[in-house]
Image (cartoon, rainbow, N blue to C red; front, side, top):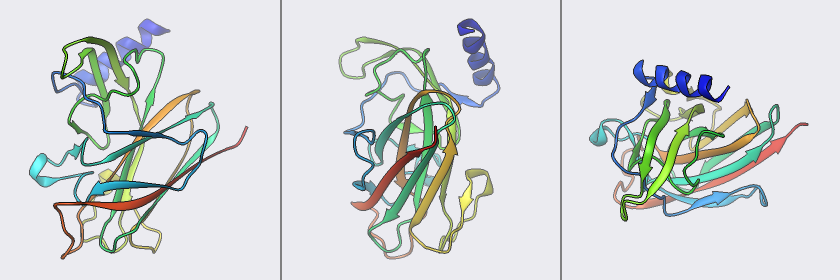
Length: 210
């Protein structure tokens, strides 16, 4: 099963569905665990951090903020994000860290991330020390962004509409018992929003079911 999973990852990487760019792994400033406390927790993100045209339409690792939640297969995970600043449209991507993901969970692949692709790196190293970390294998699980009041509709990025600008809810069934790591950022802010500073968004994570 392990070999089959690894070969599947290599095949996805070759087909472009997984990202393997970058030379060393980086650590986000913090990764908030929601297992002991569902929140809400205040994240600080830049207004274009989930998808920035100036950065090849990728997300910025250190301009976004990260969280994690452990769940069993079949449980329902709900991530609710509400901007505390008018004009900020949240985006969120969720990855799974499984048994072949041998690098410490405090590391992610690079200074940027693809919003809707898995991230995959064999032989990751610490960007500062060069220390060997293991493998980063993070299949994508779910992603989406707030469409309400947003001037850009990109169906491929799962534009979500609930009638409330600045609010985003991602809900999914855990495909396996694992740690689920997610990133929150902003996408396509309204005119007048300061794009040079971080803005607060409220994040709450709930796990329900068997």
